[in-house]
Structure formats: structure tokens, C-alpha cells
Length: 114
Length: 114
Image (tube, rainbow over all chains, first blue to last red; front, side, top):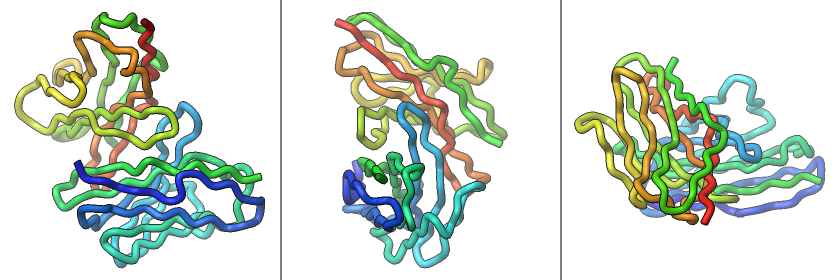
């Protein structure tokens, strides 16, 4: 199947700093990418949908100024957590959708904010 | 709105016994249903999907799922469980009224004991 990578796989940062997470589709072009957040042993919560070349669509309750999403190319989307705080600590998972509408998930990024 | 529900937070099975992880759905129109598995600190791996056709869908790692329209269910099954099947399982429905995003169930933790 298609491969989606995320970088970094884990990150620890100080409160108040910003963290950028990259999501890449390695062997296909993804016009749409999704960003999810997951708390331990809980379901995935969709944060936003990003389409290449346009602004992301955020789910209700997700602060767009807090979680900046950029989808500059058909193979790369980035999520930047700005001014991170301990409550932002979570597992962030991206997903990329191919032209056949199949959705492939990245391995996730564990963010810990001290 | 489309939704799926997984009524069991946890399922415990002895190795070699059959396993069932339950999922019920609520959709308007034709349901596009999926099962994913997640191992600790990893992203989601696709197991199988139902779009149309045969009600019994076969997927990866010996898993299968039965689409039952009258009971609005899409239970995941495997004839003989392995210890390595222990993981978190998610049922999902694709909501084509909302850009094709996946709506996930709460997740079911499967524990297979030797």
C-alpha cells in the first residue's frame, strides 16, 4: 500500500515554543490531507482537512491560529503547534488521500510539552 | 450525520478462539465502512473496507467483516485469534457529505491471551 511518513516521530519541547510536524505522501500525490489528534486509548479526533494550495478547513472547536496547517505541495502538509502548552501534549496523526479516495495514515508524532 | 459506534471498550479472547469486534453504523445513503488497527504508538493500518458487493469482506491478516444492512452492523471477525492481534481497533464510515472525511468509532481494545 501507499506510504505516508511523519517527522518527527516524537518531540519534547518547552512551554511557549512552536513545533512543526511534517506529513509526506511518499509514492502518491495527495490533494487532501487530514490531521488528527488522539489521546491515550481514545479515538482519533479530526482537527482539520487541508487541500493543496488552499486554506485548511478546521473542525469546530479547533483553534486555527493555534494549529497552523500548510499544504504547499501535493506530497507535503505541515502542522505547526504555536506557543505550545502542556495541554497540547498528544499524539498527532496525519492522513493522506489519493485520487481514488483511499486514505493512508502516517505513523504519528508524539508531542510532549513540558 | 454519519456515525459509527463500537459498543465494547475492550474484548478479551484466548489465543486460538474466534474473535468478534462489534460495530454498528448510522448513515444516510450508501455506507462506506472501514476497519483499521492501531498498535501502540503507531498510526492506523487499514484492514478492510465495504463499499458495495458481497456482504462478507475479507481483509488483511486473516480478518473479515460482515456487512448486515438489516442490523446496521459491520462486525470484524477472525476465526482464530493470535496474541499478536492484540491492539486497538477502529471502525469508520466515510462521510461523502462532508468532503469524504472518515468518522471513527470510539475504538475497541482487543486483548488476546495465550
